[in-house]
Image (cartoon, rainbow, N blue to C red; front, top):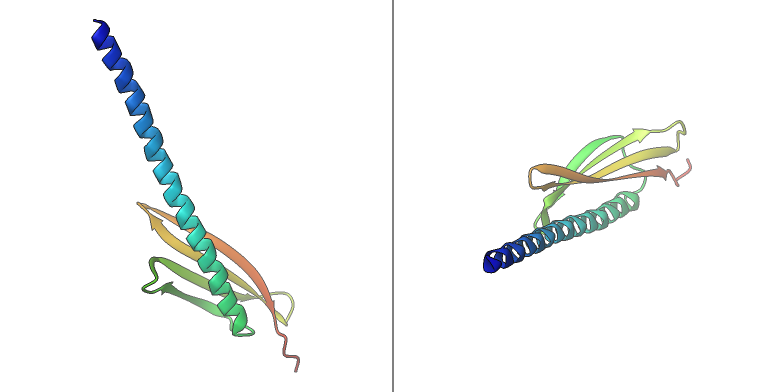
Length: 114
């Protein structure tokens, strides 16, 4: 009887440890993906800003061979100021069956005064 109770206690402890390890791995993967998405958003927004005053409209793409599971969506819209544009950028990826994303919004002004 004592052996069965000991085995029960050991099995409960092992199951608890395995669940904690599984949760830790999931949180690590989410943290890694969020970090990658944030870095990709900063990189893409830098590219958008480097091209100058953005054209109105929507555009999307991916990060090709480097990060094929991540895609980006860009929407450029007008603001109440003629010389400024709003840029909405989303980095999207799949996390199992869920779709996750990081959103960034920036306002870019026209530095070329005509």
